[in-house]
Length: 75
Image: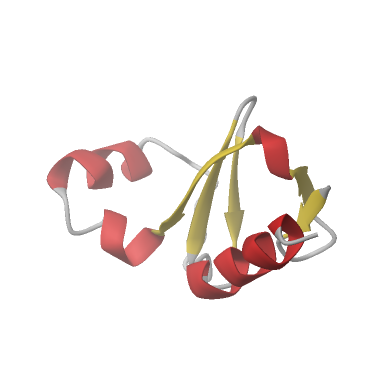
């Protein structure tokens, strides 16, 4: 199964390692340093999705993405 996380982007559910709120990550100096090293971050991005092979950003909230994951896991 796949997760749609905005702008025609899809990732296999089994490839997701973690889903994180970017604003929450910015509250920790270690996490903020990690985010600062990522050049592709945009001010509209709300969520960081860490995958097996790469990281993704989404303008969809972490709450909505988690709801989508939970709906897919029920089937």
